[in-house]
Length: 215
Image (tube, rainbow, N blue to C red; front, side):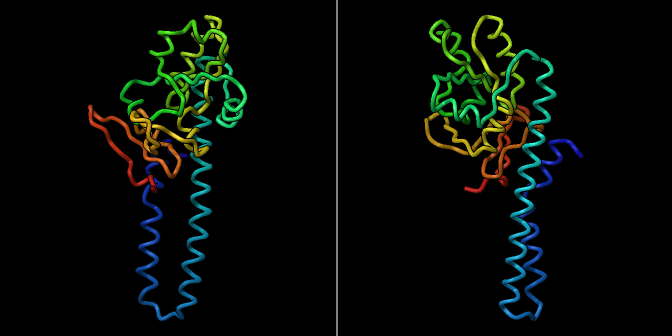
């Protein structure tokens, strides 16, 4: 298996390339119109299966990367996106985004507060369940470890915002509007789900993987 970055780049634009190639090859062929539509329908079915497999593979890569990162904070208990969404309907959960301000400007999980906001009023949250998150869970895991030592009830969001996108989770931008853009910190973590647009910084400039988003 190649790197996560190679995998993520490899799938971008595949739909367009295959579809255009098949159309060019089918157009000159003297086939009954129903047969042509049948072949295109079969192609669409195969591509749908491929995309589902690609998404599952990306989720597996995220999970593997997180397991490796979690070795640096072994005492921290993780929580899955599915479990978090269940808890949010029952418990008083405080989501803490530990990413940098420029990352949060692109999008955050609905209802999340920044690490700075949490630190300013930390006594208020002493009896709450704290769930930090970042891009994939490494920075938030280290922060969760610190909070755990200080006596907080804390769970790290495994896979963090990347796993959130693969669960189809909503995101909000700095204006409080819904968005599908995600700052992924760097191209190595360009593993957002198919309907989301990854953004990262290169020498101070934002780069967008707009081919991955379908709005």
